[in-house]
Amino acid sequence: MSMTNASESRVHLMVSTDLDGTLLDHHTYDWQPAKPGMEILESLSAPIIINTSKTYEEVIKLQSELGIQEPFVVENGSALYLPKSKYPHAHSEFEDGGNYWQITFGETRDAIVAAIHKLREQQGYTFIGFSDMTLQQLIEYTNLPEENAQLALQRRFSEPLIWQDSDSNYEQFKTTLEARNFKVIKGGRFTHVLGETNKGIAILWFKAYYEKLHKVPVDIVALGDSQNDIDMLKIADYAVAVRSPVHDYPEFITQGSTLKTQGFGPNGWTEAIQQITRVSK
Image (cartoon, rainbow, N blue to C red; front, side, top):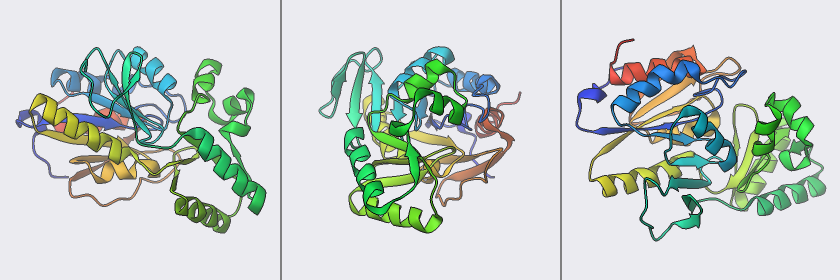
């Protein structure tokens, strides 16, 4: 990969990162191997924007563990949250969400669940969604600790599911929902049904807002390992496909610089940040 030395340019970096299998280890959810990369970004004052399929509650908890307080995107681009401590002034599109401003790009979970359950009843599709699962079932599927699993169930804008039917029925299911203005995407563990949005839409909105607010040009560094990261990777200036232990790299075309990491998950995350910023270990 050929790329400009981002750390020496006048363009500011903004990192948009997936979580499971990217910043977090796919199996253990450990983020410690990403710490050297995070320290590099902190030294450059480059914000780390979590851009995930996870919920608001999950990200709040994780940010506390990571020691960061930045805007973040949840449920595959369905909503963007900005901490009022850093962004105290309201924007015309902001909704008041307590300590955070909220911008909604997606659909309500109730509408999504109603639509997919009606399809299942009509067509006899076989799948199990989060709304069908008990807490114990979710723990078994994800290997999450009980507290984290409870947070994962607190969804507002999407419904993850495990598809247990044929590929042809999946395509039919997907086509029907897309005709009704929903989006169906595959992540590292689950298939996600959401409104007509994606991770790329949300981070581009924030990039434009950030550039206008701070009057600086911004390059997006996007890191992801799955198909649900493709929309984010496609619009990035530096697109990083992080190596996964369970599936192939996501395939995409972008006009920006691209990198496929050799390291898995958070090890690959640091590898990419070091290469992009040309900072040695």
